[in-house]
Image 1 (cartoon, helix red, strand yellow):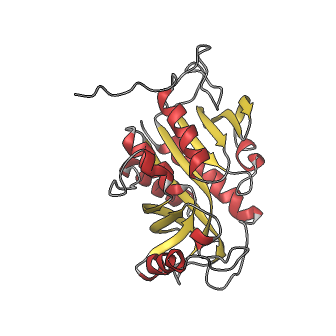
Image 2 (cartoon, rainbow, N blue to C red; image 1 turned 135 degrees about the horizontal axis):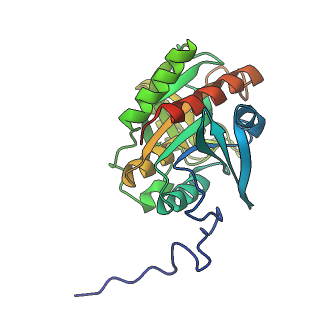
Amino acid sequence: MVMPLPPLKATIPQDGKSWWLRLARDGTPEKFIFTLLLDMEPEHFLKQMDDIAVLSQFGEYTVYSGLFEGERLGLLYHGSGSFSVSTAIDELAALGVRAILRVGNSGGMRPDLKIGDLVICSGGIREDRVMLDYVPVEYPAVPSRHMVQAEIAAFESLEIPFKEGLTLSVGTMYPGSGFETARGVIDQTVLDRVHLWKKIGAANVDIETTTVLTMTRLFGMHGGALLGIGNDTSSGEGAFLNGSVRERMALLGLKTLHNLRV
């Protein structure tokens, strides 16, 4: 019988702070919003919070905490894609974080979705590939039922319309999303799969959501995604979320976490 090899290094360094986020268990909120600077500038969230603190700023990550309606919540800015998100979630899970909500931009794939529409993710299509280091592709990318209920309650309390749907998360920005690369379409089968997912009902596409859904489910956390439609993948209309949409999404995200009971 071959004995399994040990991990190469400890999950938490000797100073008690996580490798990349540089956070310790003490002072780290139980609930976090995840987003990117390209999608949502910090001001949209921070101006709705009190007693704001910068918990860490290291490499591609910046972590804030603040009070929203009397509850301390976390706000984490990460880099683009599954690798950056997965590193942050793994570290937060080890520190006892209980809930993560992704709030950000996506490309519309369904005909009924227009620029500026807001989508509650009801499930994910795993094309991110990074998650294969954690679980096989058959493992589902599903949001927490409690998180979805908290999202719906936030929308209803603010009387803001929303839609629901499956989010396709891909591993690369250009070929994975169905765009041409600098050399055009290199692998037609990659493009064919994007068209397949669109044909059979993917609502929108990004490169982070299924990582959040898969890892939070795996680690026994509450996970979910609130996504705005910044562009249309068929017409090419749009680019990023505009300011008024970001304002609504920031408030909805904070209200969702406040509604969630962990």
